[in-house]
Length: 228
Image 1 (cartoon, rainbow, N blue to C red):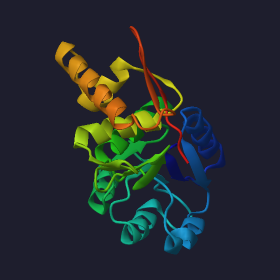
Image 2: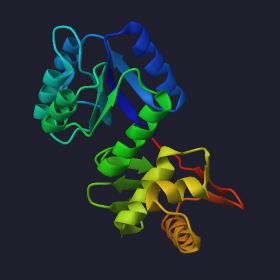
Image 3: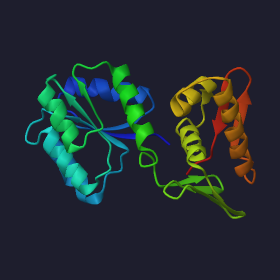
């Protein structure tokens, strides 16, 4: 399950660079050079997890576009891009409801980090509400993992870990990355806590042998969730 990004950037060169880099980082990017095209799809909903908006665009500037988006979906995460590193722009964006702000030209790695930090703060709204996982279904709005054998009410931490693993499905994840991303610290006690939560998730998914969370000694975990 890839994170879907709405990118509004009228500069063809910069937009293409951002799109290609973010896709290399395993994001799914829908790039719009004309903000009016985004306005056209607003009534039908926004199938994205986060929006990246350039402030200086023709016809409709980024601030105006943000107001339209937030009117339709007031909890939609937004990050502003601007060529002007001025205080007034930063304040205007934050007052509108932006989650972050970065000046162009920006370092793609820094942009990626900011996106991931926003998504981490906005969970579970940054993921789909209903996720099918093999024989199970996850309702993130209710912290509910369901199976024909019964329902399991997850803790917030259990769901955060499960969503993190889903975002890195079919990959190897290091223990350090999980601890730094979810616990924001990495020591013996948090490491043991991670092991406990991993054991719980394995137990929860015991009715579906296709769901695999495999430990890799000295590295981390390899996860394989059948999703549809």
